[in-house]
Amino acid sequence: MGRRRRQKVRRRPQKRIPDVYPCPDCGNTAIKIQIYRDNGMATVKCGSCSIEMTIDDVNPLTESVDIYGSFIDKFYEQRSVEA
Figure 1 (cartoon, helix red, strand yellow):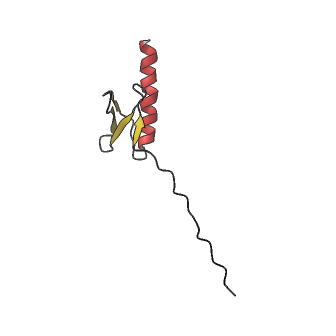
Figure 2 (cartoon, rainbow, N blue to C red):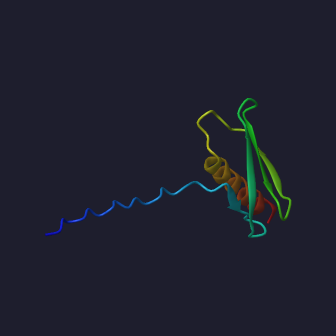
Figure 3 (cartoon, rainbow, N blue to C red):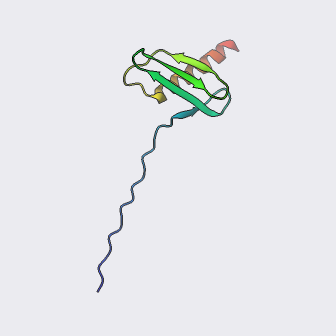
């Protein structure tokens, strides 16, 4: 008589927050965000179309996703004012 074998528990890997984001101007996934917590600011720069913006509202709990969201808001706000 044989014993029953235990099935291995398969765990799903957790989804990670991406390091590089899509650019709203050129469409390439080339936006890199650098956070300077000591100065309270962050820089958002696209590697392909070289668009660059500085975000000033950075606190210790701010993540790169939050900065990307405020960058997108400011980008479309400037675009609607110019049009």
